[in-house]
Image (cartoon, rainbow, N blue to C red; front, side):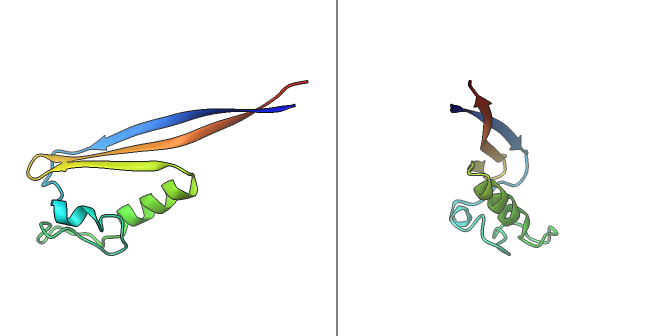
Length: 87
């Protein structure tokens, strides 16, 4: 008999940066998308796209909370399964 035990791993990454404008949240995980408020800050707009693809591959979820001039918080939840064999 094969049983599956499913647990979740959760981690949070936050900053106290410039925040993400609400109008940018819709495309936040699109490749090469950069927020309208980044100005001359360096970046390619690929980082969050890569993160989202990795999370999707592992059947996880990512949640974003952001306020302008206060910061952003990303919460990632990933399933962790362990196969348990019973005789």
